Length: 517
Image 1 (cartoon, rainbow, N blue to C red):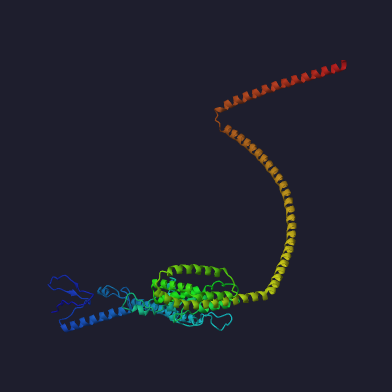
Image 2: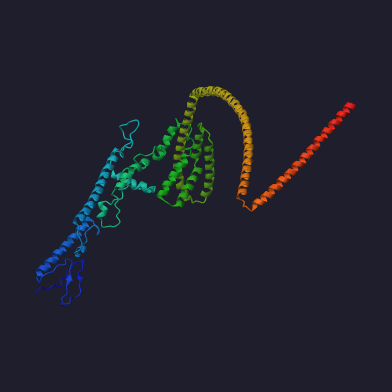
């Protein structure tokens, strides 16, 4: 006797479909495979294990290929026996998906190598030496580390790179990472390769080397060279450039004091100690006899008198008087130590100030000699330039006079032509007005004649449209009208006949008067 067993598979996703109890007392449950099993329990266990392995393999394959549920044939459809399975359609769909992904990977790899080639071939050459790159070390070299260093410059200016179509793909380092938000600073994507070439065209002077220095710094000696070398270079340039910057370096002693105070401030940050040191130094300057001698020795030299030196001396005197007043309250124990240090500092300051004055004197003398030597040449060159400008002015004035005469003649001709045209226009306009008036009169006559004809036609129409009853009235009216006309004619004939008789009588009377009288 064959019995349908109650078979349930321990699957993770699919559950058996329960069927209601049949009339014969047996209950049947359809599993996922819808198969009828025998009483052999070994075969049943092996079938369950094989099915579970197949489902696990299928699940892992779908996960590896990253296929969605719609792209994979659903096993629930196979439960329905009426469903038609189309393996060709499933194969074609998977083939199209694989082909699209392969084409995308091919495009990404191809663009990657194209960008590498573009980095190596994009080079600006110098005009003087076509074989030498203008930006050597950066152009013609594929260096992803330089792109990573450029990120900091872009972040400084808050600049964002534009994204091209394939620039938003996820590399394997992000896809297979277990973190959702990755921050891989050593990774350069295609978007940076693509946009960094055009971005660096405007930031050549800001690109940095691996050691932090600039690749191509701007040619600005005042910002790149140290303080001492910069001062020496400015003094050297003053011999040839001109009178620029003569009064920029006069107060060397004040700058030295500032540097000394700044160095002391770095060692000890106490403001009270700095103020105390300054008061001691000024007090020693006031009381040291060697200071007056050094000032007298400086006055023996023929130094040029400048307003800035006078102002600085006045400021020093006022500052010394203030320092002397404030230093009276200090203790004598600190005063002796400060006098010794102040004497050394003052001697060094005076020595440096003396050297600065000597350099300025030599500079002024060299400028005077150069000006005296080149004075005649400058005057001659300026005279030639003035003569050339005067000749040019005269020639341009003659040319403008000739051109103005020709323009005046052409203007006179144009005025004559305009006068003739105005006369012709006035005559023709008068004739046109006459013709327009004649046309208006003729139009009026035509309109009146047309209205009369229309009225006559309307009257005839009215006559024809009248009924037979009105014929008698019309006959009477016509008879009366003719009678009135006949009477008027008779009266007119009588009057005319009377006038004729009267004229004949008058003529006869005049004739008789003429004959007899």
